[in-house]
Structure formats: structure tokens, C-alpha cells
Image 1: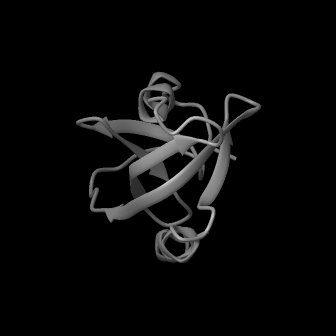
Image 2: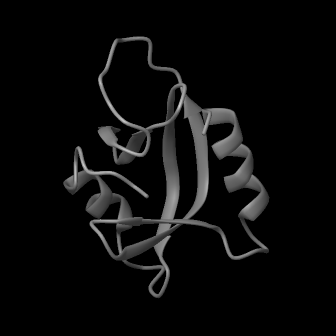
Length: 96
């Protein structure tokens, strides 16, 4: 999906709703509460959903026509668990 479509889906699914979700590393479910399109003009080779790099502590994810920065994420069971660190640690894996 294009970055703008994913961004809109995340915004529409955020609080008071249950959040947009994805999985990482096979079965770990993450909930995405806030994200924003990320301006990245350098060339990259990635498939949509692939973790590219981090901007500080925020994971940057490849989309169909660009990249998106995940600002606020949690696990589906524990909001205190640092899911961004898990996503960044899985660099080059895919969110599906």
C-alpha cells in the first residue's frame, strides 16, 4: 500500500479504537498508534513492510511508494513493553 494510505489507516484506527496492527518475527503482534510519512530521498532496496533503519528510536518501514516512521507502538497485551526496540532489533525483517 502507498504511504499515505497506511498513514490514514493508522490515524483512523487509533484511539479511541483498537489501533492498527501488524506482526513481526512471525507471531509477535504489534499495535501501531501513531506514525507519519518519512521523507527519505536516498535509494534503497526493500520490500514493503521491511524494517529499513531507525531515526533515533523510531523504526522506519518501507511501504509501496516510500517509507513511514512508527512513532508510538505497543504490544497487544502490554503497553509498557518497548516494541520499537524489538522492531529495530529485527532490522531487515518484515512487518506483515
